[in-house]
Length: 204
Image (cartoon, rainbow, N blue to C red; front, side, top):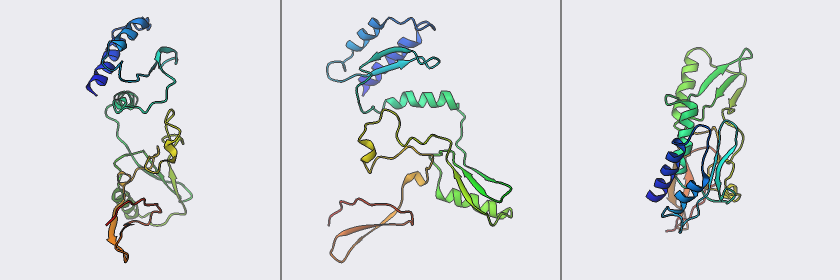
């Protein structure tokens, strides 16, 4: 992991010191990668493009299907901070139209809780809005792709793989009760009315 992080850091620094016109000598990048301790034992895949015009700056094994390492979060986090800003706050909005419809506009808040939603609805009721014609949920803050482009094709059949969604509630977890049934086997019962399937491999 340290070697991989070091390699990424060197590549980033290399691009930072190049001219704005991206006059990059690819042979120097190749040499940088080949001198890395990872070169002999790992598969290194890189694709770097100019964000303003989508022109390719440098690519290596760009068509190989690889599971991204956790260090990829360094790039995605920086891209998110650069786009949203360092002071960005996730917000969940509530709106009512002239037909007395209530809209919940999701903000993809990763820390939103069920209790916070209940508190918000109680606040709305306290302001005199006790009955609504319809309830609509607006999740348009992100697109409808359940998996990001480039994920492995077998990820969508894995029941443990979370999908990309604007819906985040209670860290996307539920509480369950565990008890022993009449056959002496352990069973799990979710403490929620939300429909779900439980894969249990617990044995007693």
